[in-house]
Length: 114
Length: 114
Image (cartoon, rainbow over all chains, first blue to last red; front, side, top):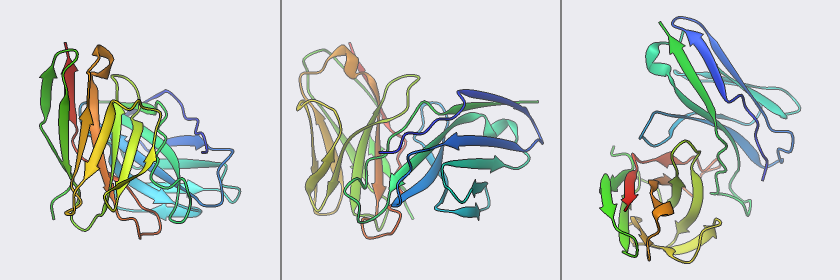
Protein backbone atom coordinates (compact mmCIF):
# COMPACT_ATOMS: atom_id res chain seq x y z
CA UNK A 1 0.00 0.00 0.00
CA UNK A 2 1.18 3.52 -0.78
CA UNK A 3 2.90 5.28 2.09
CA UNK A 4 2.27 8.95 2.72
CA UNK A 5 4.58 11.62 4.10
CA UNK A 6 3.31 14.88 5.55
CA UNK A 7 4.69 17.50 7.94
CA UNK A 8 4.37 16.60 11.61
CA UNK A 9 3.08 20.03 12.59
CA UNK A 10 2.09 23.43 11.23
CA UNK A 11 1.15 26.75 12.80
CA UNK A 12 -1.17 29.36 11.36
CA UNK A 13 -3.24 32.37 12.38
CA UNK A 14 -6.94 32.90 12.18
CA UNK A 15 -8.11 34.09 8.77
CA UNK A 16 -5.14 32.70 6.88
CA UNK A 17 -5.23 30.07 4.16
CA UNK A 18 -3.47 26.86 5.17
CA UNK A 19 -1.96 24.42 2.70
CA UNK A 20 -0.84 20.98 3.86
CA UNK A 21 1.11 18.95 1.33
CA UNK A 22 1.31 15.18 1.34
CA UNK A 23 3.74 13.02 -0.63
CA UNK A 24 2.67 9.62 -1.92
CA UNK A 25 5.31 8.59 -4.44
CA UNK A 26 4.14 4.99 -4.75
CA UNK A 27 0.47 5.71 -5.36
CA UNK A 28 -1.21 3.04 -7.47
CA UNK A 29 -3.59 3.51 -10.35
CA UNK A 30 -6.54 2.36 -8.24
CA UNK A 31 -5.79 4.63 -5.29
CA UNK A 32 -7.86 7.62 -4.25
CA UNK A 33 -6.44 10.38 -2.04
CA UNK A 34 -8.46 11.07 1.08
CA UNK A 35 -8.04 13.60 3.89
CA UNK A 36 -9.47 13.26 7.38
CA UNK A 37 -9.59 15.72 10.29
CA UNK A 38 -9.46 14.52 13.87
CA UNK A 39 -10.09 16.38 17.12
CA UNK A 40 -8.85 14.93 20.44
CA UNK A 41 -10.85 11.91 21.64
CA UNK A 42 -13.07 11.92 18.56
CA UNK A 43 -13.18 9.76 15.46
CA UNK A 44 -11.61 11.05 12.23
CA UNK A 45 -13.95 13.17 10.16
CA UNK A 46 -13.92 12.85 6.36
CA UNK A 47 -12.92 16.15 4.73
CA UNK A 48 -12.35 15.57 1.05
CA UNK A 49 -11.38 12.92 -1.47
CA UNK A 50 -10.02 13.06 -5.00
CA UNK A 51 -8.35 11.14 -7.79
CA UNK A 52 -6.79 13.85 -9.97
CA UNK A 53 -6.77 17.61 -10.69
CA UNK A 54 -8.82 19.68 -8.25
CA UNK A 55 -11.71 18.90 -5.97
CA UNK A 56 -13.55 21.51 -3.91
CA UNK A 57 -16.29 21.22 -1.34
CA UNK A 58 -17.74 23.52 1.31
CA UNK A 59 -14.86 22.78 3.68
CA UNK A 60 -11.67 22.52 1.64
CA UNK A 61 -9.97 22.12 -1.71
CA UNK A 62 -7.72 19.31 -2.81
CA UNK A 63 -5.09 19.85 -5.48
CA UNK A 64 -3.55 16.83 -7.20
CA UNK A 65 -0.89 17.26 -9.91
CA UNK A 66 -0.88 15.15 -13.03
CA UNK A 67 1.67 12.64 -11.71
CA UNK A 68 -0.42 12.15 -8.52
CA UNK A 69 2.72 11.71 -6.43
CA UNK A 70 1.62 14.45 -4.06
CA UNK A 71 -1.49 16.32 -3.04
CA UNK A 72 -2.25 19.56 -1.21
CA UNK A 73 -5.13 20.14 1.15
CA UNK A 74 -6.14 23.80 1.20
CA UNK A 75 -8.19 25.21 4.09
CA UNK A 76 -9.43 28.74 3.36
CA UNK A 77 -9.51 31.32 6.15
CA UNK A 78 -8.91 28.99 9.11
CA UNK A 79 -10.40 29.62 12.52
CA UNK A 80 -9.40 28.44 15.99
CA UNK A 81 -11.81 25.51 15.61
CA UNK A 82 -9.72 24.16 12.73
CA UNK A 83 -6.99 23.22 15.21
CA UNK A 84 -6.78 19.45 14.76
CA UNK A 85 -4.76 16.61 13.31
CA UNK A 86 -5.07 16.19 9.54
CA UNK A 87 -4.41 12.82 7.95
CA UNK A 88 -3.61 12.18 4.31
CA UNK A 89 -4.32 8.67 3.08
CA UNK A 90 -4.25 6.84 -0.20
CA UNK A 91 -6.81 4.09 -0.41
CA UNK A 92 -7.58 1.60 -3.10
CA UNK A 93 -10.98 1.89 -4.64
CA UNK A 94 -13.62 -0.70 -5.32
CA UNK A 95 -12.32 -3.76 -7.12
CA UNK A 96 -8.88 -3.78 -5.56
CA UNK A 97 -7.86 -6.50 -3.12
CA UNK A 98 -6.73 -3.82 -0.69
CA UNK A 99 -10.02 -1.97 -0.38
CA UNK A 100 -11.09 -1.12 3.12
CA UNK A 101 -7.70 -1.04 4.74
CA UNK A 102 -6.89 2.57 5.49
CA UNK A 103 -3.27 3.14 6.49
CA UNK A 104 -2.92 6.18 8.74
CA UNK A 105 0.38 7.91 9.37
CA UNK A 106 0.94 10.29 12.28
CA UNK A 107 -0.80 13.13 10.46
CA UNK A 108 -0.15 16.87 10.59
CA UNK A 109 -1.04 18.69 13.78
CA UNK A 110 -2.35 22.11 12.78
CA UNK A 111 -2.34 24.77 15.47
CA UNK A 112 -4.36 27.88 14.63
CA UNK A 113 -3.49 30.89 16.77
CA UNK A 114 -5.60 34.00 17.40
CA UNK B 1 -29.77 10.34 8.85
CA UNK B 2 -27.85 8.79 11.73
CA UNK B 3 -24.12 8.57 11.42
CA UNK B 4 -21.93 5.83 12.81
CA UNK B 5 -22.68 5.11 16.45
CA UNK B 6 -20.59 3.20 18.97
CA UNK B 7 -21.18 1.92 22.47
CA UNK B 8 -20.11 2.24 25.16
CA UNK B 9 -18.31 5.58 25.04
CA UNK B 10 -15.90 4.63 27.83
CA UNK B 11 -14.96 1.36 29.46
CA UNK B 12 -12.59 0.29 32.24
CA UNK B 13 -11.42 -3.31 32.47
CA UNK B 14 -8.66 -5.22 34.24
CA UNK B 15 -5.96 -7.38 32.72
CA UNK B 16 -7.17 -10.79 31.58
CA UNK B 17 -10.78 -9.75 31.19
CA UNK B 18 -12.76 -9.78 27.98
CA UNK B 19 -14.53 -6.85 26.34
CA UNK B 20 -17.17 -6.39 23.62
CA UNK B 21 -17.56 -3.14 21.75
CA UNK B 22 -20.48 -2.36 19.47
CA UNK B 23 -20.97 -0.37 16.29
CA UNK B 24 -23.94 0.61 14.16
CA UNK B 25 -23.01 1.76 10.67
CA UNK B 26 -24.23 4.86 8.89
CA UNK B 27 -27.62 4.36 7.27
CA UNK B 28 -27.23 2.66 3.88
CA UNK B 29 -23.76 1.29 4.59
CA UNK B 30 -23.01 -2.42 4.54
CA UNK B 31 -19.34 -2.62 5.52
CA UNK B 32 -17.74 -2.07 8.92
CA UNK B 33 -14.06 -1.63 9.69
CA UNK B 34 -12.45 -1.46 13.13
CA UNK B 35 -9.36 0.55 14.10
CA UNK B 36 -7.30 0.90 17.26
CA UNK B 37 -5.80 4.29 18.08
CA UNK B 38 -3.20 4.57 20.81
CA UNK B 39 -2.55 7.95 22.35
CA UNK B 40 -0.62 10.22 20.00
CA UNK B 41 -0.73 7.77 17.10
CA UNK B 42 -2.81 7.40 13.98
CA UNK B 43 -5.53 4.73 13.85
CA UNK B 44 -4.35 1.19 13.08
CA UNK B 45 -6.55 -1.12 11.00
CA UNK B 46 -7.79 -4.20 12.87
CA UNK B 47 -10.21 -5.84 10.43
CA UNK B 48 -13.15 -5.28 8.11
CA UNK B 49 -16.49 -7.06 7.92
CA UNK B 50 -18.72 -7.35 4.87
CA UNK B 51 -21.60 -9.78 4.31
CA UNK B 52 -21.08 -11.05 7.86
CA UNK B 53 -17.56 -12.24 7.11
CA UNK B 54 -14.12 -10.93 7.96
CA UNK B 55 -12.69 -9.72 4.63
CA UNK B 56 -9.39 -8.14 5.60
CA UNK B 57 -7.29 -8.20 8.72
CA UNK B 58 -4.47 -6.06 10.01
CA UNK B 59 -1.56 -7.11 12.18
CA UNK B 60 -3.51 -7.95 15.33
CA UNK B 61 -3.46 -11.20 17.32
CA UNK B 62 -6.30 -13.69 17.44
CA UNK B 63 -7.39 -12.21 20.77
CA UNK B 64 -9.13 -9.65 18.59
CA UNK B 65 -12.22 -11.04 16.93
CA UNK B 66 -15.38 -9.65 15.50
CA UNK B 67 -18.80 -10.27 14.17
CA UNK B 68 -21.21 -8.63 11.77
CA UNK B 69 -24.96 -9.09 12.06
CA UNK B 70 -27.58 -9.24 9.29
CA UNK B 71 -28.51 -5.61 10.00
CA UNK B 72 -24.83 -4.68 9.27
CA UNK B 73 -24.03 -3.74 12.86
CA UNK B 74 -20.83 -5.16 14.25
CA UNK B 75 -19.06 -6.17 17.44
CA UNK B 76 -15.39 -6.17 18.31
CA UNK B 77 -14.30 -8.65 20.97
CA UNK B 78 -10.96 -8.59 22.74
CA UNK B 79 -10.00 -11.51 24.99
CA UNK B 80 -7.32 -11.73 27.67
CA UNK B 81 -6.89 -7.98 27.85
CA UNK B 82 -3.40 -6.53 28.19
CA UNK B 83 -2.40 -3.12 29.48
CA UNK B 84 -1.32 -2.28 25.93
CA UNK B 85 -4.87 -2.74 24.68
CA UNK B 86 -5.76 0.58 26.27
CA UNK B 87 -6.74 2.79 23.34
CA UNK B 88 -9.53 4.50 21.44
CA UNK B 89 -11.35 1.92 19.35
CA UNK B 90 -12.91 3.32 16.22
CA UNK B 91 -15.52 1.88 13.95
CA UNK B 92 -15.89 3.07 10.37
CA UNK B 93 -18.61 2.21 7.89
CA UNK B 94 -18.72 2.32 4.11
CA UNK B 95 -20.70 1.08 1.15
CA UNK B 96 -18.88 -1.72 -0.63
CA UNK B 97 -20.47 -1.06 -4.00
CA UNK B 98 -19.49 2.61 -4.16
CA UNK B 99 -16.47 3.52 -6.26
CA UNK B 100 -14.41 5.15 -3.53
CA UNK B 101 -15.78 3.23 -0.53
CA UNK B 102 -15.28 6.31 1.62
CA UNK B 103 -15.17 5.35 5.28
CA UNK B 104 -17.04 7.34 7.88
CA UNK B 105 -15.93 7.03 11.49
CA UNK B 106 -17.86 6.87 14.71
CA UNK B 107 -16.91 8.74 17.89
CA UNK B 108 -15.00 5.75 19.28
CA UNK B 109 -14.93 3.78 22.51
CA UNK B 110 -12.20 4.68 24.99
CA UNK B 111 -10.94 1.48 26.65
CA UNK B 112 -8.73 1.61 29.72
CA UNK B 113 -7.13 -1.61 30.93
CA UNK B 114 -5.82 -1.57 34.49
